[in-house]
Figure 1 (tube, one colour):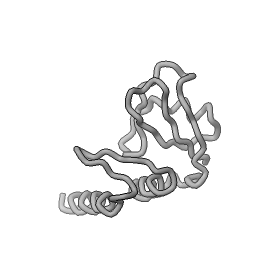
Figure 2: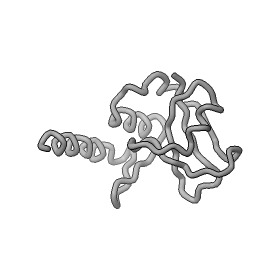
Figure 3: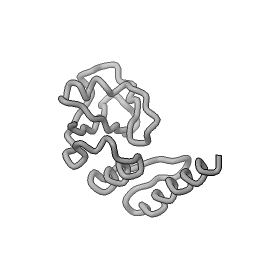
Figure 4: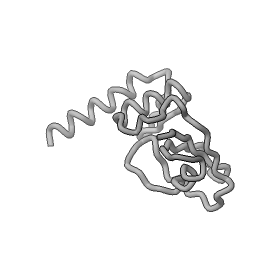
Length: 111
């Protein structure tokens, strides 16, 4: 499926959301969907025309990859930034970002 990066002119924050859809219009319909993944945000958009949808061709057909792998590709290929607690993660501290997933996996294994 085609990958799309959504953003909005309405949002005061520079949030983006990665979605997979057959067309730009179907991708834009997913702008206000809640998701448990770090790479998908509810953009809380009221005006459909304020949604920007750009292709993320390097992530086409990657919806079955792990959350970690998708986030890492967004950081490397699209210079995306992730906010976790009070930390900002980007390509400069990508190793620390990877460790977040390892810590989460260990936590889940112990439960």
